[in-house]
Length: 67
Image (cartoon, rainbow, N blue to C red):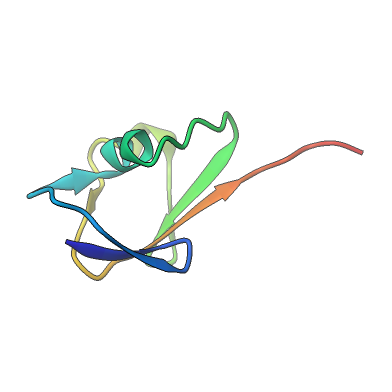
């Protein structure tokens, strides 16, 4: 499977990949993130149910707070 992850093409050897697994594999451990798949925001409660398909565009946006 080949996806566009944060504007970089990446290949994965999984038959099925959900958002939760993607975050684990890529070691994204940020506390405050926004996930978008093909432009649609995915809520945290939907990470396991949201399947990433070949050719999808996935954005993992790390939110930073401060002043």
